Image 1: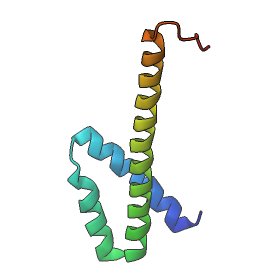
Image 2: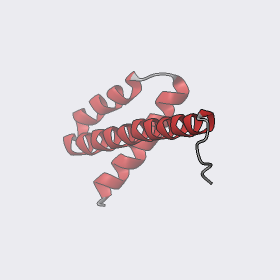
Image 3: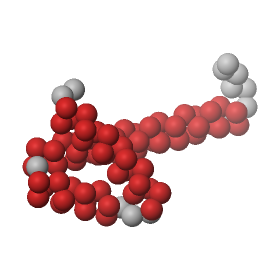
Length: 84
């Protein structure tokens, strides 16, 4: 990962955390607009990191819910073998 990607990814992590802490989903877009004024390359790297990180978080949440649902179903199914 090059310097631009590293810096943009760090900023993306911080921006996502701040947007969640402040309950301000527009914060990420505001940062992207500010970056576009100074460096379109950095803006694109930032937005790529944001998209990848948010997509991964959504997918992880989906996976965890699916696992929890399957475990709950296994516990309530009579005669289902215990997995452990």
